[in-house]
Structures are given as C-alpha cells and as structure tokens.
Amino acid sequence: MADAMTGTPTETWAGMLHHRTYILDPDADWVVLVHGAGGSSSIWFRQLRAYCEQFNVLLVDLRGHGESALVADGRDGDRYTFEGVSRDVLEVLDHLGIERAHFVGISLGCLIIRTIAELAPDRVQSMVLGGAIARLNLRSRLLVLLGNTFKRVIPFMWLYRIYAWILLPRAGHQESRLIFVREAQKLARKEFLRWFRLTMELPPILRLFEQRDTGIPTLYLMGAEDHMFLPAARRLAERHRRAVLHVIERCGHVCNIERPQLFNEVSITFMKDPVAATAG
Image (cartoon, rainbow, N blue to C red; front, side):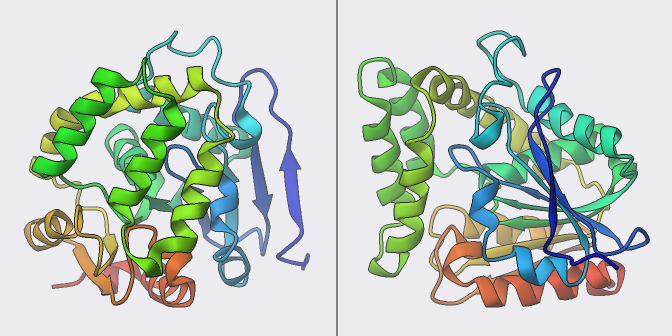
C-alpha cells in the first residue's frame, strides 16, 4: 500500500481544474474537499493527514483559484454560475473515474457541493457542510447589496477585509481571518469580480435548497460563534431528513481551521457511517 500522504499532482490541461489525489487503497471511499470563494485547496492543510489515514482524498482548486488560475478564461464568459462551477468538479471526478464520493466543503464551497447533489445525486455518498451558507440574514443581504453596488469603485481587497472582519470578528478568529485574507490576495481583480457576482444568485438558490430535501446524509458542522449562518443551518438540520447538526464550541465560521481536531473527528466519524449517523 502506498503512503497515504504521497500526493499525485495532476497539472491543469484542456481547461480542467488543477487537482491532487492521495490514494490510501483502491477500494477505499473517496473524499472530495471543496474550498470556498477566495481560498484554495491549501486551506485543508489541517484535515489532510487525518483524512488520508481513512480515505482516498481528492483536492481541487476551483476555477480562478490556486493552481487553477488559468481555468477561468473561456468558461461562462464573465459571468459564473453555481452549475458551471459545480460541473468543473464533476469533470475532474469523471476524468479520475471516481463514481461516488463523500464531499466536504467550507463556506461557499458548501453551495457548490449542494449544487452537485442536485446535478448528480448518485455521485454524492454524503455531504459535510462546514460553515454552511444556508440562508442570508438581513445583515448578510445588506452586505451583498453594498458589495455589488461598490465592487467596481472600491479596491476588492478592502471589500474582502471588511467581509473577513464581519464573518470572523472575535480575537479567537484571528488566524482564520488572516488566512482568509491572505488567500484572497492571490486572486486577480477580474476573477474576484466574477466570483462576487455569484452572490447575486444566492437568494433564489438558497430558497431552492431549503425547500428541496435531497435525502443524502448531510452533516452541518458549524461554529457556535458563526453568528451569520448557524441559525439557518440549525433550521435546515431540523427540517430535512437524514441531516444532522454538530456545533463546535469556541469556534467561528472557518471551523476546519479554528478547531481542526474536532472538525476531523466529527466529520470522519460521520463519513465512516453516514446512514447510521442520520438514522431516525
């Protein structure tokens, strides 16, 4: 058996997302890690070793992010859609011959996973949605409106720093806030604007996801201090069958970075037997 931490990088070609695989065993389950907007696959550095001891792991850099920086051009023009970005990930699974996988996401990456569940439900064995964006409250709707109004006149990193402080306001969130901003600095302005426009799709797509229950085992893994999104995630976990919520104390929005050991333990236990975890 190969060392589970020996990654096999696959260079981007013909427009495919840059990705990296870690093979534990050909018969082991796959876990696909999906980062949020402004991040990259590097934000999973505190999950990788623990996951690789249990699963085959696929890391992807979404279009325009990380090593997929050149994938943006020629896809959907200047306007991205959740469906288009989600099909990018499915294209990588098709290329690698991965028929079915567990999907783990953080922040906006959760919406990409949820879109994949709509497009290809048979490909999704379970969903772990960390810091899930489940509904926009009044404050977040106002932020989206103001951001889209002024995004062409305010330097985009100013906007990103403002969002980072609002999402992660406490002293204990400092590390994740700094990582959040550092990763965003790698984005080109043009790419930032493409992704920011996606926020205008959020209200209708969130309403759809709230109304439609996929029946796929789902774990909402949320920080107790995630003041913007925890209440909505709690409602969805109560409303949808085969959905459960685990709240991590002393933790904000980016819970995979702030409390990685607990994030890993809870998510791995869930993925090992998601049907049992969501029974009843």
